[in-house]
Image 1 (cartoon, one colour):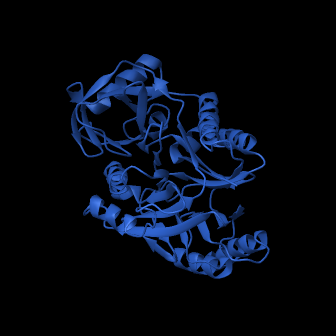
Image 2: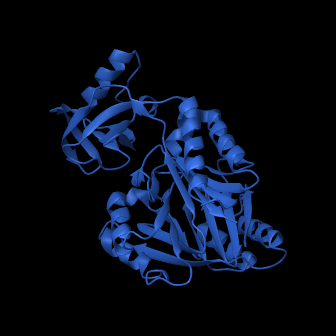
Image 3: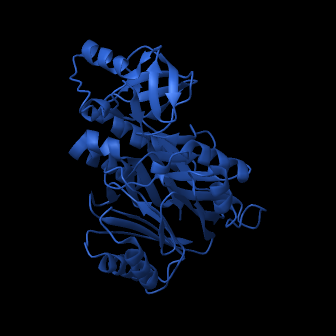
Length: 388
C-alpha cells in the first residue's frame, strides 16, 4: 500500500510554512516519516529556509518540486501559497536527480538527472516514472525532454512542467532536497509495482487557416507567411473584432495562442510580447517551417480538457484505485479563466474522489507517456494519478 498526504499553506514566513507542511505530512502518517515529498511554492518565499524546515519535520531529504505561479489542492487554491504531497509506500521507491546548466548543455543536464535513477537496469519494481520540473526560463525544454527520453530508453513516463514565479517571468527555481537552483532541472524518480496514469489535454481548436513559420530565432517568432509575425495577429484581431495593442498584447494573446500542427493534434505555444521589428516572443520555441494556427477555446472547453486528461490518467491505472494525483496547468490558463479556473480544478476533484490531488500553475507542461501527445506543452492540462 501507498499512503498520501496533501497539504497547502499560505503562511508567509518561509520557515513556518515548511514546519506547517512537514507537521501535516507527519500527522497524516501517524508520526512516521515520509519517503518523499513533492512541493510547489510561490515566488515570495526563501526557498532554502522553507525546504530545510520541511525536510526536518517530514523526516526526509527526498524532496523535489519548484517555484510556481499558483498553488492548489483538491480542496483549496489560490496564489501566494505552498502545496505539497507527502508519500510513504511499501511498493514504491524514490530518488531525486538534479541537472544543472540547461542553457549550456541540456543533454548533459539530462544525463546528470538520469545518473541518480535506480531503475535503468530493471529490478523488482517494473513501472518507471518521474516528476520533472525545469527552469523553463532557461529554455531548451523540448530538447531536455527529448534527452531524458533517450537516456532512459523510452522506458519512463514523465509528467510535470516549468517552474514559475507568479507571472513575473524573471527568475524561477527547481527544488532538490533542501537546494533551490536556477538554470536547472529536477526529477523525482518513482519506481512502482503498479503503473501510474498520465493524461494530457488542452481543449483548443484552430480559429484560422494555417500559417507557415518562415523565420524563427529560438522562441522569437519573426515571420509568418513571409511577413512580420505580428501582422498575422493584427489581421486575425481585425477579422474577429478583437482589440489588439502592440504595446500591451497579452490580453489578446491569452485568448489567441498558437497551435503547431502535428498530425491530428496541436501542440500549443503562448505568445508573450511584440518587439519593435514586429517579431513575437513566445513561451517556448517553434520549429522553422512548421504550420501553425491561431487557436481559440472557451471556459467550458478548458473544463472538458481537464476532465479528459483526468479520465485518461485514471484509465491508465490498469483497474487499480487512485491514491492521489498531481495536476498541472499553465499560468496563462489561470490568467485567462480568472475565477473560472476553479471549475477546472473542481472537475478534476470530482473524478478523482475519494483521492485528493496537489498541483500548481506552471510555465509550460511536461508529459511523456504511451498513447499521449508527448513533450513540452503550453496551456495544457497534465494529470498524473498514482495508485493506492
